[in-house]
Length: 179
Ligand code: IMP
Ligand code: MG
Image (cartoon, rainbow, N blue to C red; front, side):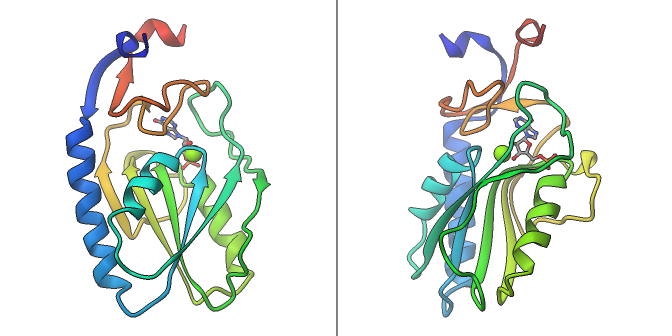
């Protein structure tokens, strides 16, 4: 069972729900008179995106992008590959990138640069988790769920070797799993 592989829980399902509700309120306020396009950066953000979207009562569109992941390593290679691009034209749109975790920032730095060329009205970043201590770029998130410690975490969309995304909470794996 996946639960047995968890050493420590960092954010419970209840804590995630409460925080995402508050983030939703922020978007309902900030984008009240706009018509934003929320872009989920797959796969990591799919659960966060689904829960966040259900907190919104503003008019909005949603889209999905897939970027390459680390594979089974736990650190960034710095190489970002887009395997599924947007289906909307984002020119003059207010875009919000929805990410699971902002770590080195390499993925988002690349995406922001790539999408900016299409002339959106604005691009904001919403990340469920932020690891500021590991940043290697100037990327700053506009909306942050939680600041998290410099540890490799899994659950609620976040994976290790494509596993553990289905955990309803976020936690740290037992040491032996990595060896
Ligand atoms: P960055 O490019 O280093 O900011 O990394 C962003 C991506 O790396 C995230 O969208 C995750 O897919 C992955 N990632 C970074 N840290 C973690 C972690 O602690 N657990 C699981 N995935 C992570
Ligand atoms: Mg990801």
